[in-house]
Amino acid sequence: VSPGGMEPDDHVKAVVTIAGLTGTLTANNAAHPILCHTTEKGKACSVGTLSSTTGDFVLNTANWNRETGTLKFSVLSEHQEGRDKSELVVTFNVTNRQIAQTAIHPTVAICANEDVNTDADEAPILSASARIILAG
Image 1: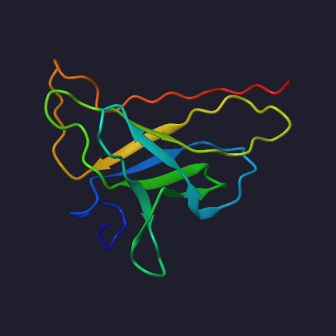
Image 2: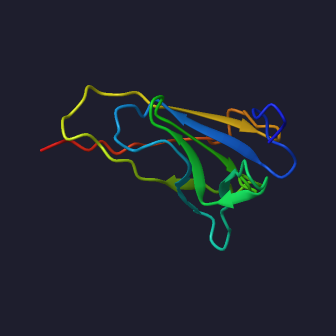
């Protein structure tokens, strides 16, 4: 990540920020566990966060902020190459409160290190889905 922490450097392919997951009981964690896989057969998936103590990437972790409901991580592996594009799928857990809250509207932002093709014939660069869990 660049010195300002906002743009990816040559090792980071993209920085992903999922925001608006407010109302959880999950405490702040600079190394929150996150799992990653890709839909492209035989293709490896690598995500992580930059350690503030060692300066190395810690794989399969993300930075979680409870107050803002924000999960931020770096994508370290190549994706979306050629015409047969792969999907990058990440999963993580947070603990919900016992009492249901009003609906939230999370957002996903991606800062990529390469050009993004926005031709009308191309599939979207990102799609996201959320599973809503109702108390009961």
